Length: 401
Image 1 (cartoon, rainbow, N blue to C red):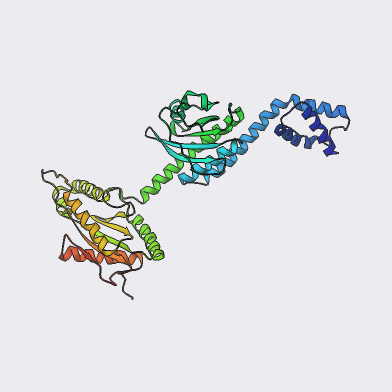
Image 2: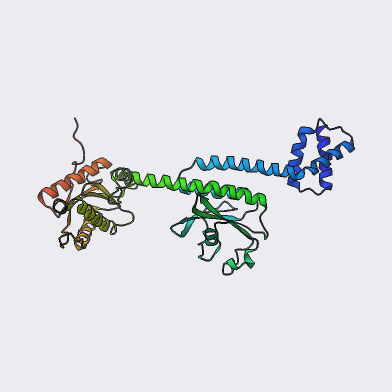
């Protein structure tokens, strides 16, 4: 009975040339009424006519339901993520989901007047495959400037895309990502066909953009707080907590690969005199400049951290003892050549003393490596300041009680 009723309603909807997807939705509503409508043809026709008369109202309800469902899904997906890269990929995936024939989506982050790449996703599921650099006079910066949604119905024949590759054709929509009064980025979604975007699509994308802006701001805040937890406030170098975690990672990596790993503990010679003579404020400035200079002259794979006071620790992956000696010798020369003026018109006279421990020669565990390098530093400070001494085998291990 119900199936016969629905089939007859479908025939009426087809005669009225209702789009297939809307037909299916209207038929889903009819299921609830199938038992209440008499089987006569005139009754079915009257019911269908009443349904079509209320088509506009029903489409509004349908759109509102879609927006509520999208909001629920987007909120769940975004609030479950705090890492910025994960947030951006989630936003990109939701955008592609909201517009069925979308070709690709690009998200850019906006900070200090500049747009930087955030994430991309295309219809084949490729992530960050072909990022497009935002042009100063292009769509992305126009959206940032106006803080309004922009729709380009035909990229190939629009001035904003006059000097872009021929592959960039079809239509595109750019949405600003704004939270409060702050613009945090822009999202561009393109599709291969020429023409505008429906109001339903724009409404859903605007809803996504609002949620995305909040999620990006939260992720940035989480990133900043996490960075503070691992950063020495005075020097900007990684702190002891970051050092311990990184050293554990490097020890595991060296154990798997069989490659050497060097750890260097260093102390700033001459700093105590400056601190005692000119005070802690000047001492802090000297530390900032001295350690900042050293950081500029290490490899990208190396890790320099403040251990405490005027002591710093350098982790050198894939580095032998002889290679470590070459590195610290260069750092000593760089530090001596670095001119740091003092309040009395003189320049700071600084040097480095240190201890070197190498895995597996001196220790095989992270804490033992640190202790071995620290013991060598202690000997250098006590007997041969301005030099780097090598750890003694077994000095990193704590005695057994």
